[in-house]
Amino acid sequence: AQSVTQLDSQVPVFEEAPVELRCNYSSSVSVYLFWYVQYPNQGLQLLLKYLSGSTLVKGINGFEAEFNKSQTSFHLRKPSVHISDTAEYFCAVKGDDKIIFGKGTRLHILP
Amino acid sequence: SQTIHQWPATLVQPVGSPLSLECTVEGTSNPNLYWYRQAAGRGLQLLFYSVGIGQISSEVPQNLSASRPQDRQFILSSKKLLLSDSGFYLCAWSVGGVVLTFGAGSRLTVL
Image (tube, rainbow over all chains, first blue to last red; front, side):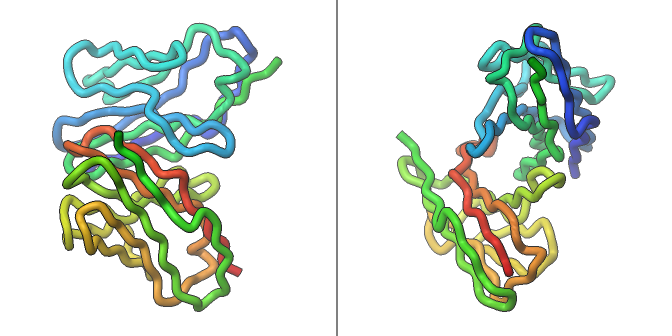
């Protein structure tokens, strides 16, 4: 079985500042890892994914994440956020047929 | 191209009434299909997933059920709704069981 923990329910950050959204997972098998984003009043869309290979993966809108197997983490980062990044971000893990999501982190961009 | 349809978009139902939410996928065959529920502060909770016709795996014991009568059709049902069933229900599909594509969601309010 697998599980996902997003350590922060809300993260406030000033516009143009860097941000890191934390995600830790547990699984008894090899995993695929994902970040999804949900903009206000919209559905979820894929931001980026780690399937294999390079542990640093780049996604849309300038986001990137690093897979750290020893720390079982997959933290999401962006060097400079914009007001349009206001959204809820979900980390997800797939170990078998199931895809399990974390509880989400709301990113608040402060002017 | 692949599309996913989910209906109804919104639904207001009294406690004890039945429920049927439908999801269909176009442009692909033999997808994995998923039902998630999104409730405030609880992230996305996996309810059911299906890897083929008639094959349903339940993740959360409750008064909901799911069926897959056709390859690209996934139905979420209840015989008697509870107040706690209120939420935003999302259908999703994947081919190869990796990246999820979500529908627009169905918002259920139980009064």
